[in-house]
Length: 147
Image (cartoon, rainbow, N blue to C red; front, side, top):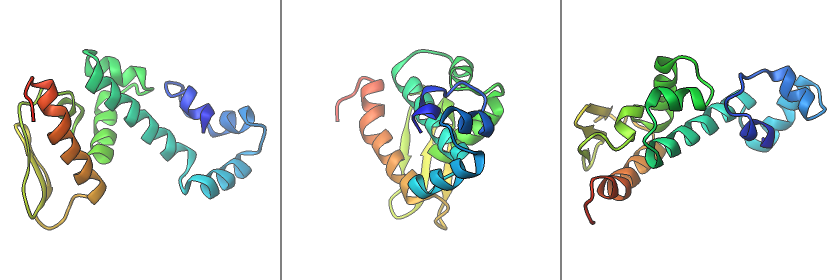
């Protein structure tokens, strides 16, 4: 895992990762799954999204610069992956969106750019919790408001 965390921007190559930790690719997959309940690629994607989110929240870098910094060559592919993991697009996460409202009793979030989720429970509870933290903690700081 440390190898993947240190090499976020490097294109993923299972054989190279296995060689870096001195095991076969099959052994790496088996041991990685036993320890993390995930594949190395999925872990890397999550780590890249975490890093990108950190950059979006703490720097003024452009989304395209952040996309490249975390190892993606295509901004559209990165945006789809980011939205799948976070529940918002990168442009909604960077604080440039003016408002974010979580509708009570429904698994949906309304932003100035549209609605995420559905009233039929389309949003994962972890995504909803993450969006609540975003709405309650991050947006007021970014927009210069106190809670």
